[in-house]
Image (cartoon, rainbow, N blue to C red; front, side, top):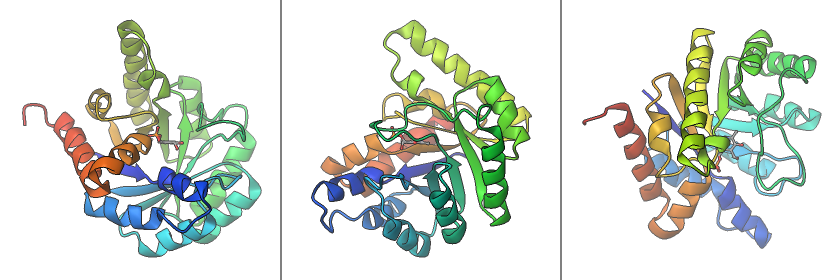
Length: 244
Ligand code: PXP
């Protein structure tokens, strides 16, 4: 079983471009659910460039699948997450100037703060995942600080420019998935995945959840959110049942 978490941040990006009321990421989430999404993912960034607190609160009320909040370690964001209580929180690094999350969280470097935040979120009944690079030291540290899941950053795989590099990055993800699974962690993956490159990732048997945003929202512009999600869901489910 593999879940598809649909990230609707970029629907909010379009809305914020005009500081308007539409398109509404909450509506997009409802459409994604109807298309077969197993989860809705949003990133409440410190600069509030796309998703707003209002969106997360409404999603908490309306979403009937899993709600996954991507969040930094900033104190006001942690307090907000503890109050709203998403089903899942994915801790990500955040830099103000970046276009999107550019690398994994350095859990080793921020061990004390990550541990404190993981404990607080878990006390509120939230499943905690750490967005990390496929690196053994980071996986070990994720386990030590009490995270229940890790999400491996698939950006290097997605952006590989030649077949050798592509294969090498895929191998790293396969090894990391095995290692994390054996360490008792749930394995998620995401970033830069699209309708063409998702197959090999969805085929990794330890992967339980994929979080995909940009490619689905981009396709939704032309075919609608329901259809865009349906197509992605079909690809990832087929990758799990080769020959089906
Ligand atoms: N997972 C995490 C932790 C992310 O930060 C992002 C980007 O917001 C995604 C998945 C989705 O990446 P993309 O938009 O490239 O599909």
